Length: 327
Image (tube, rainbow, N blue to C red; front, top):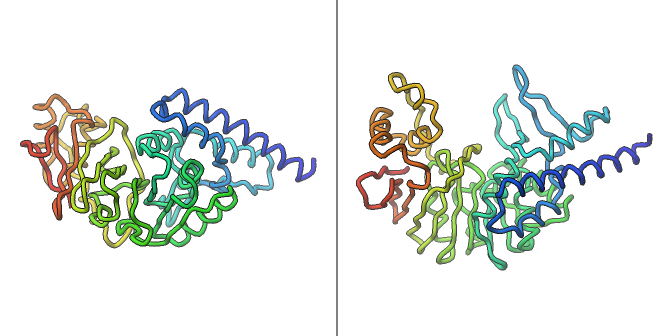
């Protein structure tokens, strides 16, 4: 079979795999509140954004790529590109530094971003460019800006976006500083985990803007009141992302030993969320006492307030008894 015929078969396979992924996300209910996103996922070809990715194997990572001489390996690459799973896209010294998020989580986040036609969006963490392409498909290239600290990441994101026919603004800079030259923004969406809310973002937002970002192991949705104030609660959804890198990012505290706590608690996902959120403020035993006293609170009971130079996390009420400073 000719190379051209093989490529044609791969294109057909990609179309089928994309349709299967869209049906899977549909069943998950991720975009129920804003089904317009379905069309973006149907249209934007994810495989163009992951020309290769890495699969964890014993002792390291195996690269799966679209130019593999073995046609079965290329098929495996296409199928993997449309799995509803995160894909490791950049590994350095054995450590994951960039990934393409799980598509159903991306769909959930885009839906929660609550965009309207005409909204200007800043994405923190360009990744492969796939998320920026979904945004650009819906809003138009001119309203989408994506930023990343790593020039290799932004260069490949530009290349992938162009291959898919999209040309949003791609900026190489520290995402914690925002992109003031493209402000103001109606929405800011981070695709990397934060330890606090970067203060430079707020003055770059319009009044009433929405900020959606992974923090601790959850997703915080903030409403911006003005250049110095924002507040909001965590969503139900758990979220695990590569950390935001950059000189302005405070270091996350070291994980603490949990010896002495009941085993069921040590592995409880919501208790781990509380531990991460209160790192540096509560020791694990204080966190456990709070956890039991407050009936094992779900994520939606927690929130974050930014007011001037102060930022704090809280349970139930920003001015209530349970509040912990953020960096």
